Image 1 (cartoon, rainbow, N blue to C red):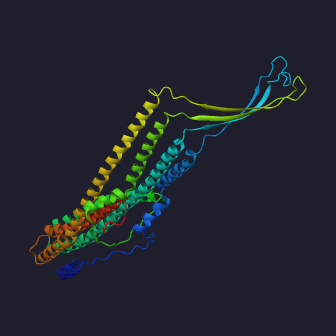
Image 2 (image 1 turned 180 degrees about the horizontal axis):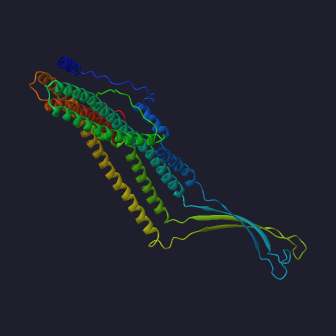
Image 3 (image 1 turned 90 degrees about the vertical axis):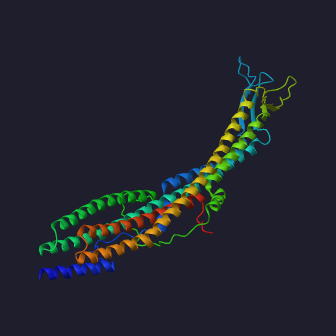
Length: 434
């Protein structure tokens, strides 16, 4: 009777394995809201504090434009001129005056326009920095999201394997009880169960860390639970060639646009430094109020003055020449930095493209060849073990190998989508397929 029950249980297990169906307990705890990839990206773009800081900086630099093109504030002066110190009388001397004057500085023509141009270019660079930060944030969110998705699938694989090995233990115990199995089979299955428990602990720890990372990116509470969908579109589309994407990146990548604007601002500062060889001006007017009478009895007339001054750039060798050299060096720095960034962008596009293609190929290899072959191997091992032609160790190893390949498939699929996220960020635009 025991042998019959063992055979019946083992045959049931074989049918379950061949059908690929497993029964799990139903979680009665209310699940958290499913967080899709698009929702995670939207939440991060709306609430990420790092992005908000870059946006505030761009707004601040945009306000400099009007300031840069405005004239310096005029100066108001109030003076008492020629006041006799023996009497402090405003009527004793004819030249005693109460003066009110105003003075306006006038930069040499073209300086304000160049300052405004440099400020405008810096503001545009800050706006491009904001767009670059958006790309980086979307890339980071997608990277963490896909890593979480892989870890969830890995935990599912471990759970399925634990259920299977528990069934193996039951079968091995039953066969051992009726004298048709070995005790070492039971110990082996229990050892594999313990190893799976260790793997589950490690993977769960990694998942919790990734949950914290994703919550921080979305500006949520670090301990807030995250539940991802259990299935996704596993299609991996082929983008256009890397050479074409590199050409698109030159025009679309915000970091390159920002650096080009900074180089333009440096060029404007060179031109502004050259303008310093010419003088700046000051103009002013003073109204002098007089009290008292002239010797002939008539009232003293008020006086008016007009002023004009300019600086004399006499020390050009130690000031203006050095300033122009400085600004030229800064312009060259920005020029070389732009060239370097273009090389880096080309490298990022090429590396991301290579990673996407290779990980995509690995995912397809696992899905279309390795996993089906591993399943056939398990089926053959199960059939052989049932008739005593395969030992228990090889059966367990074949099954754990199958689930290891399944885990590697999900890891490859996740890595391919992470590489795709890096590729989109490197190019600077979403549409990379046509």
